[in-house]
Image 1 (cartoon, rainbow, N blue to C red):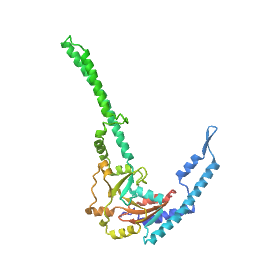
Image 2: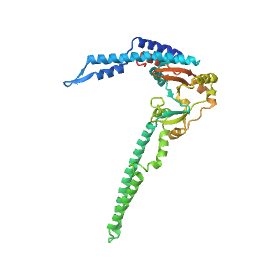
Image 3: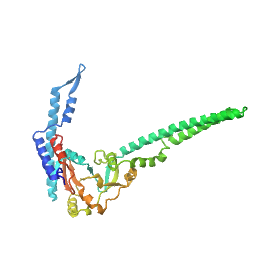
Image 4: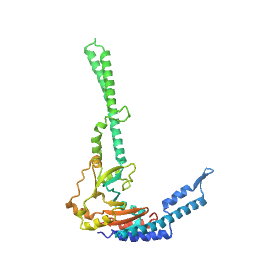
Length: 348
């Protein structure tokens, strides 16, 4: 382990010092202060004027609310620790949720609330937006090419008729020109019918090849890029307006301390837990994997070293508090990031 990597117990110690600082003298984050400043501004006689008394009132109210949240944080953290101790589980670290989110996102980990059915909530909106954009571009390209093709049919008919007239002076233009015009119109209408769904006005013909185009397009995405689309904030969704997919994790039997980990998890099985894990260690089963065109290999026993050196973390979230109850593998947290998080005022 590198000297710039920090283990969770030390992180708890560093963050707790910052927490004690904030509890003793709560300070609003700079971003929150700026929002209050903007809120206290108004236009008087055409000028932007800051109501300083109102601004001071807003800051005092926000600071009082922050004090209440810190007080609640202390009581919640204490109750969570007592509950875990009652279950004979010793938490590795108890941290403010906002600080924890900064730590795991900086480490490139993903936070997933996996149900008892092994499924996690994601969103496919980012993917479908990309597909819809590409589909519309293809539809427009086909539509424009059909217009060009129609014009070409008409022009070719006219030129051919002109040359035929040179050899047969008595030949009439009317019939071929009319037939060429009809052929162009029929071709255009047939193409239009193929492209458009008359009920919804959406592109239809492109849908015939959309599946193949989608797979080719999304195969170009790296696994990390795909995850950023389905879990934009590096965490699963709450289940509202989301898609459920099964998530596959390596088997615990690969670990030397598998029995210890299983013992801990069995003691907290009725607590809503979160799994914070490196993206290289999980994959999605079924639908989404097919959509993404990703054929990620199962993590096999021979990859045991890779598995044990990664960073699966099990945590319990409650309000603004996070209790880390299990972690194996090397710590992914850099001292630079830990110090940076501890120095900020938005720990809550």
